[in-house]
Length: 233
Image (cartoon, rainbow, N blue to C red; front, side, top):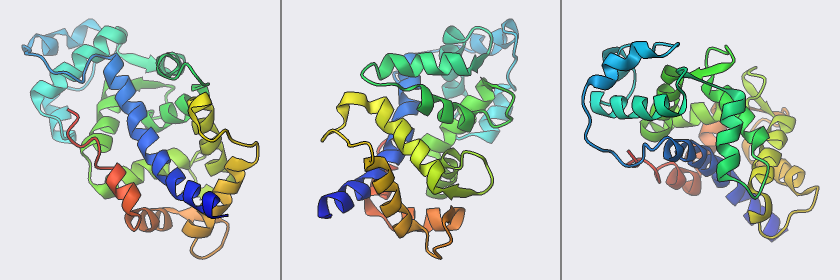
């Protein structure tokens, strides 16, 4: 039982870390982790794609990225996504490259839906940088709101045990053979039960945004993990 409690405490942290790491995998693929000198010609090329993003000035006002950072983010995004948008299949292909030991398709599906804020079936450059701005430079409250939205699969304002189980299974499937010790089939469900005992304060069977944020803010491991990538770009 002690091992199960310890694993579940770590599980909550893993959920947050995997969320950020998965976004960083996308950044790495796009060649955006290392900055290089740039010119404003990227802004002039915005009209060369089918989907034309908002002007850099507007995106600078809406995110925590400066003009140069947005130019570099756009170049990487454009190189990998010439059409100016990413569909779900492309998203899944990206993550399958970085998690070859497992099946990342389900987690990529959930993450794609979290980035696709207008629910049009594609992630535009605006969607991408808005989500990235929150994950890498947002306040604790903003990051936790974003994470809650990821776990709230049907977007009804609550996290149910089944939704949390779907996310946990997706994480384990993505990690594949990297999980240690090897998991039994019922391990994710056991983890979710312990998770709910901690987060579901009023024992009504669902976790609200307030319960989620309150529990995470009082967990040192989760708070520490959310600061790991503050200075990535």
